[in-house]
Image (cartoon, rainbow, N blue to C red; front, side, top):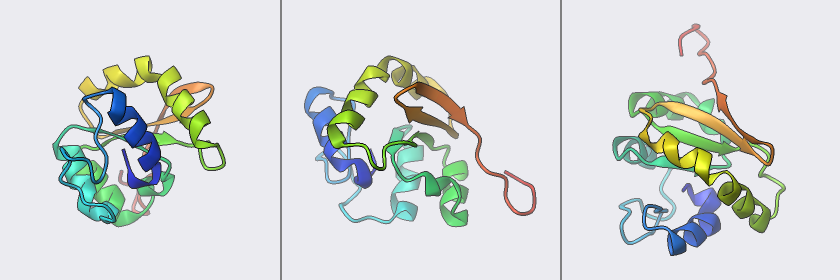
Length: 130
């Protein structure tokens, strides 16, 4: 879980042993770490990132690390104005579709909304490459 979804990460970690978040006792990512610091860890560890920060897919340095380290990302694309409880319910509602994705080799990205989960394409670079 990304720090911008920390309350959700803490709630899920309380009931699932396979969920970690920044500051969690089994996660080396410290609170306040920059995206460029923790993206390599998330990808190399094979974790599924759950975040509201859709811009990770667009910022050149973060996008490069996302691809290089095979990050697996679930983006809460309609979660910005959604109350935390509703976001948690949405994640739990679709967990049976999220969990199998952990076995799929990254990099990949999916959008999660109340309607469900769908694949997102990483935006092309200005030079036309991924």
